[in-house]
Length: 96
Image (cartoon, rainbow, N blue to C red; front, side):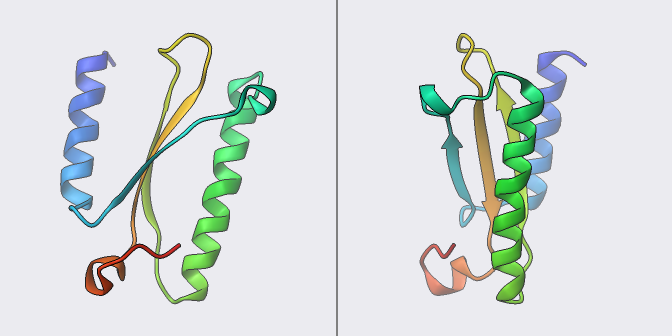
């Protein structure tokens, strides 16, 4: 799959599942905590998502998310994370 096709698929996925109430954040690593391998980075993001999902489940809510790993800026791995929390639009604020 080329970059253009991947971007198009991601845009369609986002448009179908997320609105303006979604939370977008860019997650990066400090130099002293940066994983050396992609497998370790995957393990860390999965642990992060597990914590978020557990917190949402305790409140009776689901967590919908999309994340993308980017490594185009040198050797630094960056995670772009987008999440939808069902209650944020009604309450007018972000809850975690």
